[in-house]
Length: 256
Ligand code: MF3
Ligand code: CO
Image 1 (cartoon, rainbow, N blue to C red):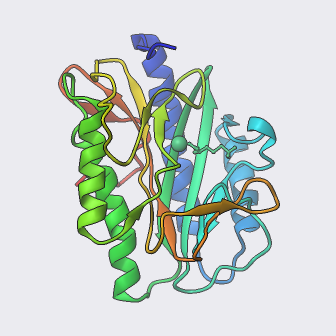
Image 2 (image 1 turned 180 degrees about the vertical axis):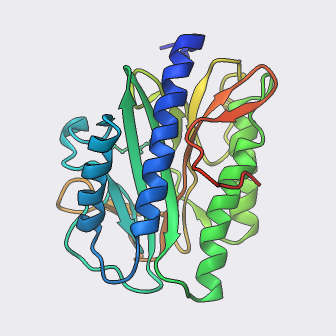
Image 3 (image 1 turned 30 degrees about the horizontal axis):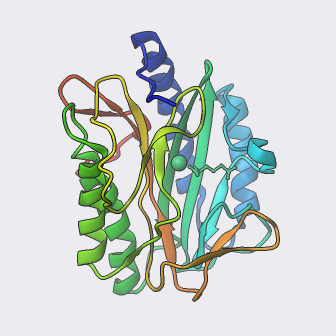
C-alpha cells in the first residue's frame, strides 16, 4: 500500500475535524480532576461529540467499545473508560479520534491529575511531550520518517526512559491507520521521504521501567509487564510545502 497524499479539499476536512478534536481534548483535560472517574470523562466526551456533530474514530474500531482510551498509570494505551476514580498524582493519557467528512484525526493528551506531583513524575510526563514536539520539528519535505523517529528516541533515551517498540505512530486519513508507520525508535529501514500532503500521527509511548507490555483479559487494555508508569502524547500533523501544520492543535497550546 502506498502512502496517501491528500488533496487540498481532503486536507481542509482533516483541518476542520482536527480543530474540533483539539477543542474536545482541551475540554476533557479541563474536566479532569481527582475524584472523577474515566467513565465520567467518557460521558463528557459523548456530549462533546454530539455538540460538535462529529463521529468518534475509535468506537466500533475492531469492536472497541468507547469513544476514548483513558490509560492511567501502568496502563500504556487502549484502556477502556471505567468507574475507577482518579487520584491526585495519577498520570492519564486521554486518546481520542474524530471522524469528519470521511477523514480521521487522532490525538492524545498526557495529564497529571491534580496540581501536585513528584518532580520525578513531572519530568517523565514532560519528556513524552517534549519527545512528540522534537519529532514534529523534524517534519518537512525531504526529511524521512527516520528523522522523526530519531528525535523521539534521542529525547526519551537521554532522559533514561524506555520506548515501547510495539506501539507506533502512523499515517492517517480515510483510515485511522495508514502507511507509513512512524516508529518511536530508529531501525535500518529509514521509511519514506516526507512529501507535502502526507498526514501522520506522531505519538511517543514510553515507560519509566521495562518496555515489555501485555494485554489484559478485556482484550484491549495494554499495561506494562513490570507495572511501571507509562504515558502517551499525540498529534496528527500535515507535511506542508515548507514544514509542518499541526492539525489537532488545541486552543492556547504552545508548540515549543
Ligand atoms: N490512537 C490509537 C492508535 O493509534 C487508536 C486506538 S483505536 C482503539 O493506536 F480502538 F483501540 F481505541
Ligand atoms: Co494514533
